[in-house]
Length: 490
Image (cartoon, rainbow, N blue to C red; front, side):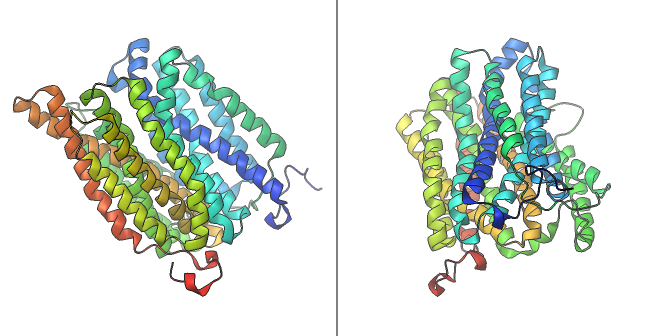
């Protein structure tokens, strides 16, 4: 018996371009919504501490629990995308996200709010690899740069404008509106997906390796929790030393990697790490990790500088970050078209250089610096990141054979989460240590904070030099060449 059209697996060759655009457009809107939601909390925590009468450490669990869930679920998505049809995975992702958003919107206290964030995070973790894998299945190699440019708007702009949007909503409304405003978008995407989405993969029987799941949970979960605890000050002076979750995570991650390498040739790996045997993929993923460290680190550090050192309020500091987020959004489609024409290296080397220039510019910021200088430094960082994201995403996935797309997407998502958490942890730790030294030396709080942020910006800028070096090793995959021999070296 033939399944109904909405359930049938459709060969991409049979899909008309309008249907392709609908599928990718729906996935992009959904992914933008879930990623935007991820960074809404950063500005809202002080308000929630007051309204829910909880401590800073307790409120931080709204972020930590979200990141932990993402780190645990993303490695499993490679398996899910092979085992289940596209439409089923989408409905599962948006179903979880919608349910979590509803729980958050009606939560009377912190614990159900954290539970809602965890349910939201399950949906968020599934959406990003689903979007990437579907794009690779539907879009011909020669025009992937253009499509990935549009997807990069989602990946880079959503987290950048999240804090600004959150500040605007909190300025005029109750914190519940952060979730109430998400509900119609989430439910609309869920309904449209139910009615219109078609399956573009061939779901197949695949055995779940039960040992890999707890190894993945303890490995990635331990690392992200450890980094988050350091970045947010959990456990300082508490019964568990801050290094312990990182040590546990590292041990289980090594065991997880060993297990995947053993199972990979048998096609039973939970997260197939044969993807890392492809040099273009590995170099691109390393660069993406460094870029994510810079992006998420600055999402935390720049507002701190503007509010604690320059004395700006939440709304003004959020608005000051908006031009950079908009610049990334405006540049990404053009960068995608340029990638289709000139390849990766001619974009990522200037991109890495501009990111580095932006971060070194931030090391020059002082308490008396003008808002214009902050704006210029952030615009430089945003411009550089816009030149990086599209070529790196497109080159990394385009270098893999089709049967590894889902695993490649899951590896990218995992690296993004771990490196984002690591970036925040490293930069905040450097800042906190310097502030402590300055205060013990008799400095005033504003001066001590400025000195701490200067140290964090310097470490970020130093790490960014690796982006420039790595850029020389990025290539455009052979099947994505525009056809001219002259382009063969990219």
